[in-house]
Image 1 (tube, rainbow, N blue to C red):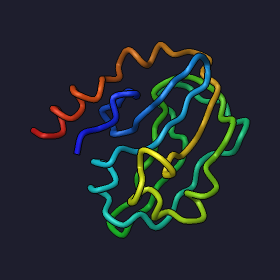
Image 2 (image 1 turned 45 degrees about the vertical axis):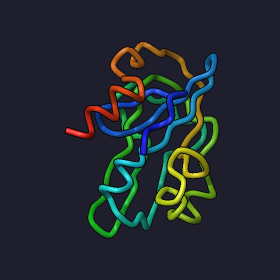
Image 3 (image 1 turned 90 degrees about the vertical axis):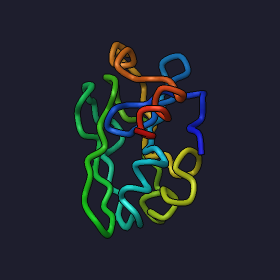
Length: 126
């Protein structure tokens, strides 16, 4: 299954979608498949400022706990309560209802390190 072309992808398997200074972040289908069944999601609180590379929270599965990293600088404006309440949303719809945080982008310089969907899909296929 190919990744949606309307967003960028990180080497740590997050996706980011940016429109103006508003961003949304989640985990890719590949990341979720590697984790297997996601059992717990905990993101930092609304109002938390972060820099590219900072952890925005954790996702736990039956196999491991993984940090979720920010590819840009910003401030969290919304946390997906539905994903915290029902972590299986990440398994069933990682690019839709399984998003993790929304944020205001303060510096999008980190986007230059992200890749498009075709490049990401090619990279995970190897």
